[in-house]
Image 1 (cartoon, rainbow, N blue to C red):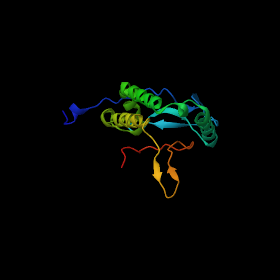
Image 2: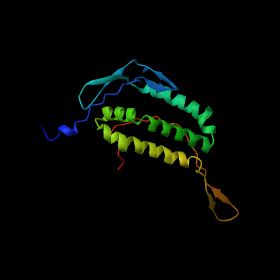
Image 3: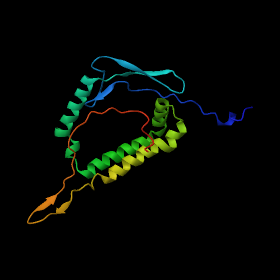
Image 4: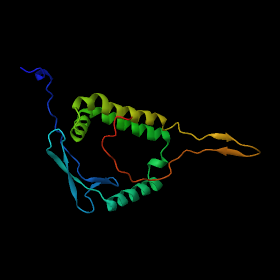
Length: 172
């Protein structure tokens, strides 16, 4: 009997439910139809074929985000309502911690236990922090010389298309 026999952890292979791009509230194929393999780094096995976004897809996503930013519900919600929505997402993440940890572990090659006790709870904590701040973001009045008054206004200014890269956790 080896010294590690009592520490064997069952390899959790989660079901990959969504492999398409999420644009404008819908799961869609890439405009080019291209996909790429995502492999479980623990085993090297292909877990799924994922839609491969390119410039055309980013343009569609940015245009949809711009439309939502200018005319959608979110920017018209009060800070209180946005905070409630973020708390609801945090609640859902806590309810599905096993599945999220398994997906994250398989994607990044991490131990399931690390996802369950560190990574997913940290993401939930971050959501709850910003949910609590959602109705507390205010501008400031500034003292300036003469008869003038200056002020700052903190508000979103637009939409950005970015690439999400792996290995960005934990923060440095």
